[in-house]
Amino acid sequence: MIISMGSDHAGFEQKQQLVDYLRGEGYEVADLGPFSADRVDYPDYAAKVAQHVAEGKSRFGVLVCGTGIGMAIAANKIHGIRAANAINVEFAKLARGHNDANMITLSGRYVDLETNEKILDAFLTAEFEGGRHAQRVEKIMLLEECTAE
Ligand code: RB5
Image (cartoon, rainbow, N blue to C red; front, side, top):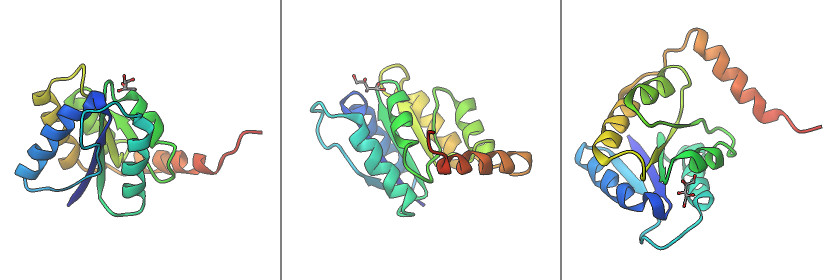
C-alpha cells in the first residue's frame, strides 16, 4: 500500500519521523516534501499530496502542520479528497469507519510523536463501515458539484 506524505515547516520534523516509522512498518511511502525545515506555505504541500491521492497514485495521504487544521482545509479543496484532522486514536478510527477519509492531517506542535504513530496505525488499519455511512459520504461527494449563487 502506498502512502503519500507531506508537511510544512511546523510539521517537518514529525513528518520525517513518521515517514521512517511507516517505512519500518512495511508501507511504501511517497515523501512529497518539503525536504528541509525552511518556512513554507502549507497549502502548497496539501495540494501536492491531495492531488497524488486523487490521481490514484497512493491509497492514503498524510499531512503534518502545526495543528493539522490548515492542511485539512486546503486538502479538502481537491476533488475526491476527504481529509480528516485527527488528534487522537478514536478520531482516526472514526474518520475511516464513518467518513471513509482518504487523508489524515496531524498536528506536529500539539500532539507528540508516539501518539501520532498510534493515530496513523489506527487510521491505516480501520475499515470503512459502509451501510448508513455510505449514503452520507455520497452526499458529501455530491457537494463538490455545488457552486455559490
Ligand atoms: C504555521 O505557523 C501554522 O500556521 C501551520 O503549520 C498550521 O498549523 C496551519 O493550520
